[in-house]
Image 1 (cartoon, protein in one colour):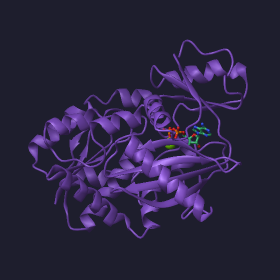
Image 2: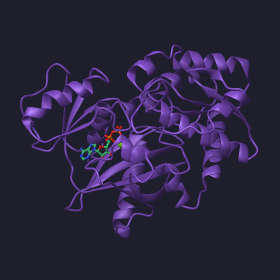
Image 3: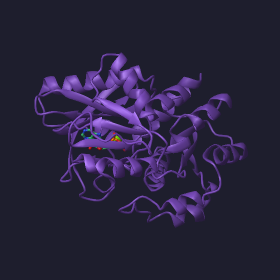
Length: 334
Ligand SMILES: Nc1ncnc2c1ncn2[C@@H]1O[C@H](COP(=O)(O)OP(=O)(O)O)[C@@H](O)[C@H]1O
Ligand SMILES: [Mg+2]
């Protein structure tokens, strides 16, 4: 196959995307496929550009807003430009956040009849909008924490859900802009911070307990994992720094709980109309009740990321996972 691996983007998750993109490129090459690397900030990369990225590392904090704003090319324009030059069989999307994950790029590729990996325009949009996704989960009778929305300049004086309270941007990832609020006096600042990443802010009941995740591939749940962090929440640093979190696959929970996570994960994947693969995250509260946190349509894709670990624990190695995802995209287009 000839595969364009598209990564980078100009969202706060740019670095995370580069780390994933580089590994997907290697995996597909190891399986004998021809790969065209595309950094959306730059277009198609040649060998020299790739060489420069060889020792790329995700830093402790996301890139500065100024650096991201300086990236001139929009994701859809960049991808379209690169693809017109090169015929490919499939576009492998490894873009987190923004136009690469929210359905914009997916819509462009759909109308261009170019096969691409992962969820389509509709599923991508639904999953990226946390408020809309939770409304759909609620309507389907699936468990998700209570929440309310507010504007950045109109925070409520009190939490309707007690404390601690979670405040987060409605359409962001990697825990960027998210706060754990412990008293009413801290709500306004948390809402203001979340508001820097979009005009809609979510206030959500805090679910204590353990954090679980499950990958979905081709309509099947993979292995369930547990994420154990020292921090109270699974924050940017814990997510991307060595030793930031302990990730246990398979999770040390009962068989019944494992099956429940897998069944719920699949229900979420279907309720949100997701495709090919996704990763669904949960909290398991001290009473043993599962709560859906969110579904990720373009989860991290380094070999040590959670979806690849979930696949590995189910017997699917990283290279094979990347190739199977491409095949699903090709089958979809037939
Ligand atoms: N309602 C909640 N209760 C407890 N922890 C939460 C809640 N919402 C988010 N978190 C913590 O914050 C992390 C990031 O939240 P999430 O909603 O998944 O946003 P993102 O899209 O940034 O990953 C979660 O993995 C979890 O550790
Ligand atoms: Mg998350």
